[in-house]
Length: 331
Image (cartoon, rainbow, N blue to C red; front, top):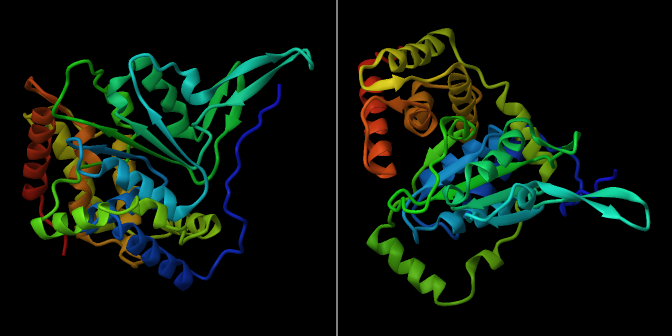
């Protein structure tokens, strides 16, 4: 069997020096900000997930820019981009692809699905069945998919940005803990300020602003930044601080299940990426504190039951925030 996998449209370029790579990162941040106005912290969290080779879950009400943010990131980094609208009748083969018999070759040929792209927008991921949701697990964890006992590697870089609406839970399939754990960060966008919303309304009165964005970073530079994240220094006292918070989640009376070892590793990697976004080669306590809720809250399971996804999120974030506030910050 053969696999015809779409390749990146970005031409190969030589890797840049670190200072040029950081300049490219600043340009990437500014480019996305042209479309996502007044949400600098949200953009920085997206870049943190991208540099850490993680995946992003955007959980918010409709109409605040979840899809626009994903499209802006994709347009700014170039390469291939596919959007998959998750619905109740979506099949796993609609995501990963399918092997089809070719009469002229008397053999099966693999037809890659939309997962074979650099940036994937999984829109309303909780609208599809667990069977289709699980089709993303191998791709998100290992950067590959297996079809008919054959493993196919996915493009690099590879980023899944999923969205879901926490306010409406009719006809939805909540993501299980194993699927939630595959997302490095869970974020919200929120409403813009009145001034920013006014500017957005003026801007959106014309053409689609995404069409005006061009790639500002090549894939070689992006991969160099992702590789450099692993070299960001975390001191022993700072690691002890992070581990104290992780241990506290496992002993909290408000949480039935605390942060797993995989979750702790993800938080560690996210903190390194956050330092890189800030242009530093070392982590500070704020890197861990500011990422505690986005990186850990969706990995914990509450003791109490709640009526909606939104109330579960708020209670989980409250419990984690209480833990972080109690643990002393290292000097």
